[in-house]
Length: 159
Image (cartoon, rainbow, N blue to C red; front, side):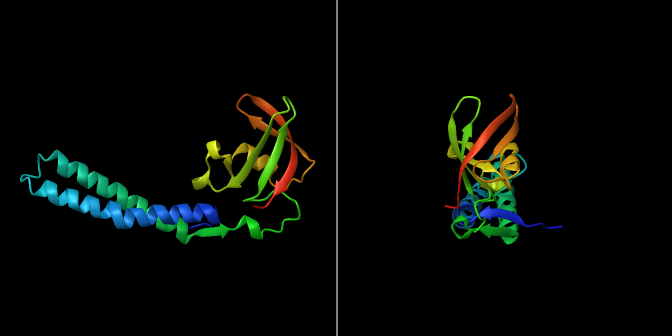
């Protein structure tokens, strides 16, 4: 049931860095916090101990989650794509909003690396779903919360 998780090369590196941080630093600090809380005596009414154990559960859960995602990852390097100008996962797309002429650039990325502030949209987002498979010059309609929007694809890049 473990399906492939698409990630850009950059996104996979971010997850690997987070995993390394959790395993080398966070795990150690949680163990130290548990030991410190234990030294205070009675564990039944020890809020520090409960908080440290809760933090440990979070850290271990996140480690397992990241290991699972990285183990199932299909890592895609956008610079090696040859999609013949078609919008695909990891491609960067320049768009023009046909309603107001505003231009925007988005990269289509995996769910874990999506960040609208960085113009990285999830492959599952309405705009990415509308763009996938299209070419420069195509006009797409996106169902936005404010209603349908039309965009013209100006350029498709693999960077």
